[in-house]
Image (cartoon, rainbow, N blue to C red; front, side, top):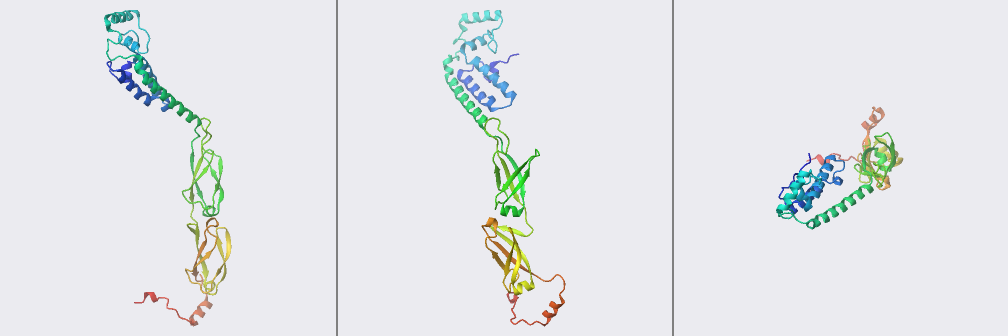
Length: 305
């Protein structure tokens, strides 16, 4: 059974032209297929309101429908009902008289203008969709500490079994995004593929820590190395170097390696940790028992009252 066009637009039978225009405009903006892609229910409802508006916005069609001459889609009803319409019209109940709210078709010219504007908007939206690039895809990548410091290339495994080689810029930090152009989802039109957005997490290192562009390293040295000084092999992000330990260095002494920080921009700060022999050294013990320092420093004077 065909639905009543008044019910479809949600207006009463005595609704004015403005009421019908307003109801249709509101529903059209809500139900247009371009605004509801893939929604079959909304598409059917849009067709219904379009047919209902076409009938009720035409003064002659509306009068015929109210008189029972045509049905809800504008088709003529059987002969006996058309006779009723002629009687109805002959009695003066025709256009403009049976319902004082009826208006000429020209009263809907502003609605036609609105439809033109909406059609233009929908066309622009459709054009934008056709030329929109594909969806960006997000990934996560864990990066070794030293690769983040010096830069590297790392392979990322994708869900579909393929791989992408990701170039890691020197100095990258956790939370940064590496954008791979054109490695996302393909476009539905001519807009090209989206991008792959790779979020980075820099893994911790067992020995190095980072502060800005500087690297910190705690270096163990023996009593002899600390006391007499001399070159000591020291790791850096780019490989080992020889670091000269000044004679008489204490635990906590901090030395600087220029240009050995992040991406060659910062420095590497080396903090010395003096370590006693892990196994008892009798010779060292005998020496210390008989050794009298030339200068006896008060090592705990800060604790004295």
